[in-house]
Length: 186
Image 1 (cartoon, rainbow, N blue to C red):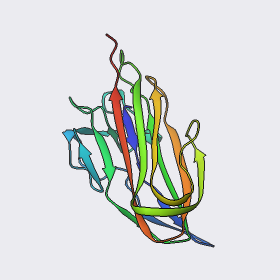
Image 2: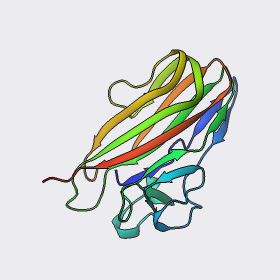
Image 3: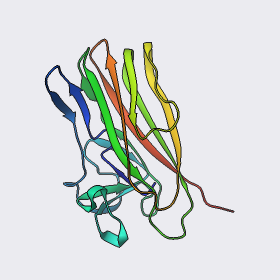
């Protein structure tokens, strides 16, 4: 995956007549950098690049602002959000956008996404809204993680918006993680 924008970028708590954003990061205020571990709101493993739209032929979502390159220069990186607190009984929506690597001659990358909880949660409702292919997530008591979602991202795949929602029966906190596996032909 070449570019990741807004991972857990709109974790939204919906209330009866309104929605309140409890965490958002579009990376526009993060300084441009190669192979950095400094991305506010996230722990970075390895290194990621913070890219301005239009740099080296890369367009971020909406062809503006900044985005993350999990391929990094030169390392492949992963990001995990800091814990994001939520209240019981509210619909929590997590959304992000992912594209393929626009660099010529690159093979498909394997993208992994995981949503987990700081403490086990009772999830009353779980819904995949957009982007996810196949199944992901679950409901029930004692859920620590929704598991890992895996998808192959071909070169130049345009941005796809991913969104899911869930309703917890108690207050808690979540974390979202994204990782990339670079698959080179032998």
